[in-house]
Image 1: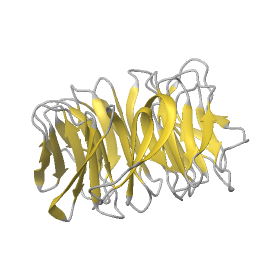
Image 2: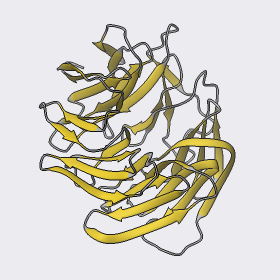
Image 3: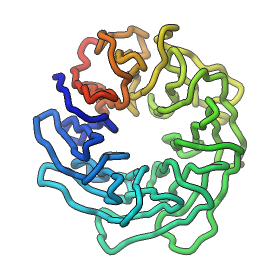
Image 4: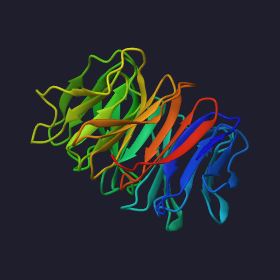
Length: 324
């Protein structure tokens, strides 16, 4: 399936049924079944799957947090005059977090009355829940901040590292917090002792990272191939070398996606191409061989059976990953 929308593709994801959903810069959420859901009066700035697995939660420049699913669109929160530009959700705890300026907000999918607000010194660029959905990490200038998501009054843990942090992700075992930075590098912390992990050498900003293979591997964009770091053992990637898969000196990897429990890895490139790889065999299959606008969104189903992509000019596609 391929289709063209006249809007930037902010995110692509799959719901629990395997349906592909695309969040667009025109404020809509589109599905591969042909449905159009008007989620925002303005651009969709961020998106994630709802904790229930039904539909998608989006934040927009209209200050609304919206839940789009088969039954329609529901407003989860509204902040007049602000942009919601980061969102995260936890299936384990049912919590949803979103960022507006220097604040991180928490909602509970099962309790409409529940709300928490956590203030930061600088703007929050990204959010991530730990595997149990109890702690929230916020990426900001100068490092990351860890909060207990349900506790109203608390002193957060601050993980300091100079520079602007733009994306965060917990390892699936909860032992590491990884952050991408404006300075073309990754930084991380081993959480039991706040040990720093410096992971540099990238020629471009790391816009996308994903843990896969039951947390044994972490794949990132930001290089001519997908950079894959080993996370096995007590020290994770410390003292280890990364591998690079699908190297192509003519372009850079813009987005990565993968299966959390398996070894299917996908890459979307700056020149518009998309490929997928089974890390066991290292065989790469071209999913979108023709060049075009940069890939801005990429997703793979949990079982590795389907892949969805979108680019900055509104082209989207869904492919079956058979034979990998």
